[in-house]
Length: 180
Image 1 (tube, rainbow, N blue to C red):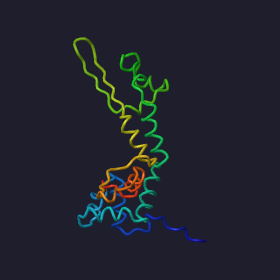
Image 2: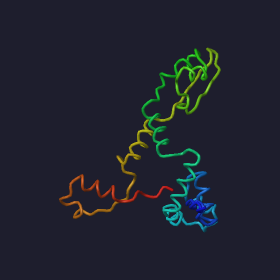
Image 3: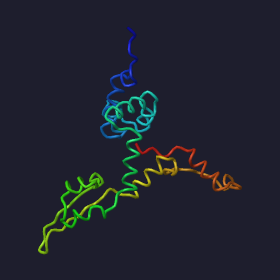
Image 4: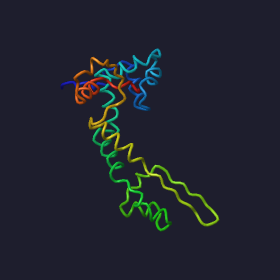
């Protein structure tokens, strides 16, 4: 009987596995690097995370619990395009509970927070939804339609005769500053 091929995660050494595990807990490469037992060095954390086998192992671990790019994109798109505070008016006005609202087809997972404040004139209900603009920005980034903060140094001679499109192409080709 043929042996089953090892997964990327199984091919890692103990320190690398711990790095992947800790990274999947909080998505902070620098912190995961230290927690895995490596000597603090932000650049090395980013380098380790970018290695193909580490990246593959992170993908395996996150997909194993249902975190896939398609699912994340769909969730962000739902916030960006479907979140509408008007849908929550029956709850805010005290006409329905959140459960009744959910049962009626309103996605209550779009709610970031709810606060209820009793007052002399009745109870005030405040519903905060996840931020649509942030979700739009995330979708633009996912689709490659935005540029992260890029540090570029260009002189006048670099720009001479360059079109806006050429300057943007250079910016897109540069790696964003590491935010890990």
